[in-house]
Amino acid sequence: MAGKPGRMFAGNLGCVATADRMRSDNEECRRTAVYSTFRGQNQIVEQNEPLTPALSPLGRGEGVRKVGEDMMTRHGMTNDPSGDFVSQLCPACGLCCNGVLFGDVELQPGDNAGRLIDLGMALKKKGMKRAFVQPCRCFDGKLCRIYADRPKRCATFECGLLKRVQTGAMPAPAALKRIAAATKLAEKVRRLLRRLGDSDEQLALTKRYSRVMSQPIDLAAGEEAGEARGELMLAVNDLMHVLQREFLK
Image (tube, rainbow, N blue to C red; front, side, top):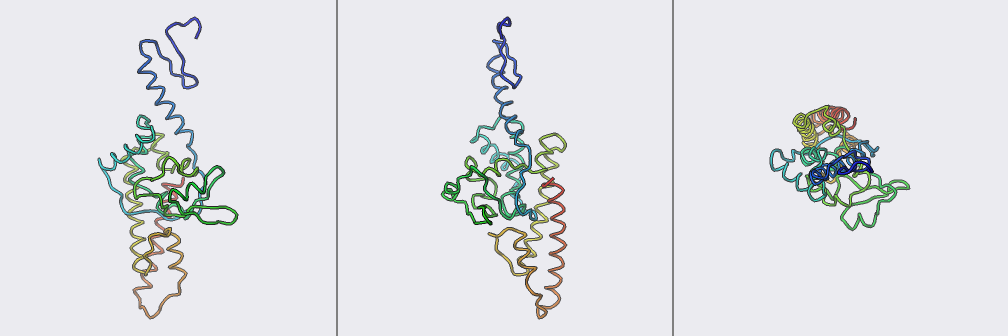
């Protein structure tokens, strides 16, 4: 900085501010810092047991936007351009929390199992590890109730759809339409599961599917039960393709 009075450099963020612009540029530096931190997590952490998608539509329009903005404000990310996409997409989706994308998620080194249990998360043994079950007990249908204390894999996971919006490869309205399409497919799967006698909404979707398909066919139930099984297989297949293409790549 010597020899250049009136100018300052904000570390590796590359923000250069003259003295008379310090206040506005400091705000820009803060936004850039948050954006860099968020984008630094831009890798999909391998989760466990990829499932089938969807939950009933979680709402659209200004109500969803307001909920998302409130969440971002609580965590100091309001001015983050990447965070704005999170506030638009995530409350309208929830597939990574509601038992659609994953059957369970393993805890990572540094996760405090006792603290997570106290916060309301349901954990289980998975071999030599511990995992939290899906649907997550801390998911309220739109947002995470323990966002600031969420497990490490939750903090680092970003679905493929969100990544494409962040990089400009897809506009947010198009992503919302794809979320709605996945939601519609998943509702079809749920409807067929209920038709075949499984209404356990506390179990991950593909686990419900596996349980239904493992049961012997009741020939006394007539053709309707067999037709429903066939419809369920096709619906799950369609759903898996959408999940792999839109969310897990």
